[in-house]
Image (tube, rainbow, N blue to C red):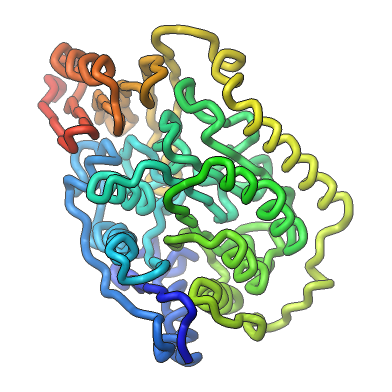
Length: 440
C-alpha cells in the first residue's frame, strides 16, 4: 500500500516525565497509540515515515518565552525533546521530505504563555509556538494559521500571539464556563494591533460530530480561506472524545479523521487527550490515515454508536448561533480596534495568572506601543509568590524602525530595579539579550 501523501510521524512518550504515576498525563497516552500503529502496520505503508525527535536549544526557547529565570529552571529534558519533536516535523515539511506531518509528543504545550514561571495545565513551554518561531526565523514563513482543536481553550498560544496580526489563532473548545482554564470566549479577539486575529469558538458540552464538523465547514474554513495562510498548524488535542475522563464532549475517532480531511493541516502537534485505551489509539490512527490520504472508514473505537452520542437540536442551534457571531467578528475585524480599544499611543493591561500544575500565582503588567506597521513592541513586568520577578521586552517579527528603537530604549532604561532579571527578545535580529537586576 502507498500513501497518497508522504506523512511524517514523531513519537515521544517521555518515559521519564509525569506529574505523578497515576496522573492522566502519563506515558501510556502514547504507548497505546504506538502499539496500535505497529499492530495495524501503518509504518509498513510506503510514504508513512517515522522520524526521531531532535531537541530544541535555549536560544529557540528564548524566541518565544521569558523563562524565570532561565529555561532549565522550568524545563526538563523531556520538555526539550517534546518541543524538539515538533521542530523535527516542521523541518521535514519545510525541506519537502514530507507532504505533512504529525508530532505525537508529550509533555503538551498549549497552556504555556509567553512568561513562564512554571507549569500550568500540564504545560511548561509551548511546543507549537516554539516551532512556529523556527518556521519564521529559519524559513521566512510569514502568515501562519493555528487551529487548536483541543477540548480546553489554548490560552497559552493565544497569549503568545495576542499582538501578532501575521499569526491567526483559532481555538475550538468546550465552553470555558464549564471547563479549565475558564477562558476562550468570543470577545477575546486579539490585542490592539491584532484585533480579530484571535478567534475563539466555545462549544457547548455534548457537542458531537455534526456540531463540530458544522463549525469546521461553516466557520473555520471560510476564515482560513479569507486569511490565506502559508501553513496550517493543527494543535491536535484528542480530549473532545466521548470517553475522555476529564471533559464533557461527544466527538469520535471518525469525527477527528473527517475534521483532519477537511482542515488539511500541514503540521499537527499532539496536545491533550486522556482516554488512554478507549480513544487515543483510534483517534490518532484515524488522523494519521487521513493525513496520508488513505481510507479511515474502518477506524472505530469499541462501543462507537453515532446515534447514541449525537447532540440534541438545542445544542446544535447554540453552535450555529456561536458560528454566526464569530463570522461577524471576523468580518468586522478592521473596526474592532477603535471600537474595543480606542486610539492611544500606548496600551496597558494588568492581570493575574495561576499556574495550577505548580501552584504559583503571577502578577503581570504590560505596556504595548500602538502601531499600524507591525505587531508593536511591548514590555511585561512579572512577579510571583515565589519571589521571582522579570522585566521582559519583546520586539516583534517584522518590527518597524520606531518599535525597534523603543524596544532598545526600554531595555537600556530598565535598570532592573525590583527584578531578578531583565530580558529583550529582538525577533528581527533573532537575538536574545538579558542582564541581571538588582533584586537578590
